[in-house]
Amino acid sequence: MQTELHTGIDLAVELLRQDNLPTLLKVASRQLENTFGLNRCWSLELDLSGRTLQCAALGDQGEFDCGDFSHPFAHLLQQGKPRELSRAASYRLDHPGFQAMVEASNRPRSFWLEPIKGEDGRTLGILVLCNEEPEWDGITAQPLYRGLLTLLSHQWVSQLKTSDQVWQRRMLKRSLDHLHDAEAVRQRCDQLAETLVGNSKAMTDLRAQIVRAAGSQLSVLVQGETGCGKDLVAQGIHRFSDRAEGPMVVVNCAAIPDSLLESELFGHTKGAFSGADRAKEGLLAQADGGTLFLDEIGDMPMALQSKLLRVLESRRFRPLGAQHEQHSDFRLVAATHQPLSNCIEGGSFRRDLFYRLSQFPLRVKPLRERPEDLEPLCRHFIREYTAREGAGPMGISSHALSMLAGYSFPGNARELRNIVEFACLQTPVGDDIQPEVLRLDDLFPSQETCIASDFQSQMVPGLPLADEVDDLRAAAQAFEAAIIRERLRQYGGNRAQAAESLGLPKRTLAHKCLKYQVTEA
Image 1 (tube, rainbow, N blue to C red):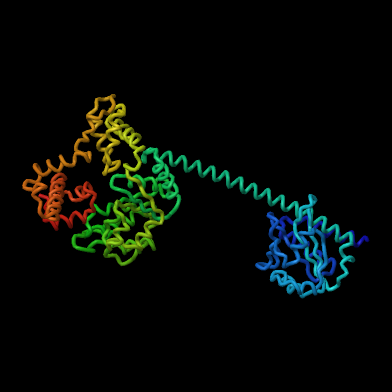
Image 2: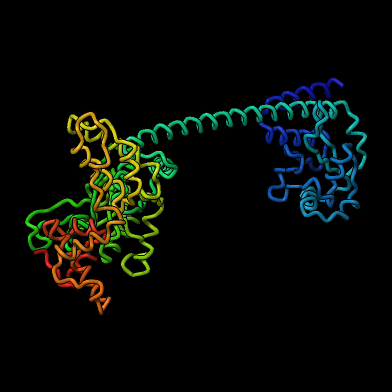
């Protein structure tokens, strides 16, 4: 009796020292094996749902569905009482997990299945005792056995409570972290609203997406019509990224001649080509540690697209004329007003580059699709004008806003800014902008006939009248050529500005000039 008491104390102390449930069950199984001379002892844990028993010692085969009565544990849980199972009875069960347990126990003559319950009667799991001698009363009736099971049950419940508290603390921390992150996102969105102005759902969603994009290292492709603020999106991504302290290098692929674009991006060594009298650091190198913004990426030549793809995959490049490659750690943001899917189908843009650029795609909706942003944009442009000039209008009248609401703004926010700033100049300081100073007479679609007539009589003498046209294709080409010629005259021969004003890529405009024999003069 004294020996049994001493042994029981040692076993109890060892169980009390275990600080997690898996080791507690492992130690308890070992104690029962050693103390009572068992072949093997298995511990099965019932999950919180009460649907599955898990035996960690069996690995992948140690999961038992409590609703599957092809193994004996489902019956045991249903009855709630311990039972003996003979080897002969175990042979008749074809459950693979149970048969794996039998094999791992060297097929003993007898099994004792003991449900472990908490003080509230809740079943915690099952112990499976394996032995060659089926005299289980000599073991299960011992005070030491009953005491060990009672202590095991108590510690099992204690570990579950601790695990539950840890889980609750983790969930609380996760909730607090989520609230903190949500508040940080909200604050950044509020800051973005100072430049990306608008209260529409489209603009609210866009600002949230910009903040999310800024928190990643994914390449971002910004798509949207001319004048919708793609450059502001790129600035926002850089501003709220972890590269904000680094440089933001901007490259307008449409404004740099094709022959110079590669040199601008990659740089060159002295003597790399005719006229290279000194070495020049490329924009890729300058963007190291920061953001590279490739505006109008759709205008990049095909030959350069393949080189850019390799740079994006390796962040390594070789300046023109150099013997060794250089490395640049930059984050790429690209933008285009062109539908790149059409460019891909037309063979002017690489499909693999498109996928590499659009890891995080963003689309800026045109102003005509978010009319609720018209008023806040107008007031924003008025405030900017007043801050820059030192004085300006107080605001804009409702009649003027109604007049603007009837216009489609093909030039988007950039066009609206120009209209509002011109109106500010025509409005007395402290007054509201009125409809008469908006000068939209030549912009409304309803005036297209007058514009065409005025264009025909004043700009393109000799253009046939509608009833004189006998070759529609020739007339359309002549009209297109006349528009291009006049727009080039308007911008002093600057093809980049003329192309932008017409919503065309610069190379397309150059092709049409060649086709129609249009010169800048």
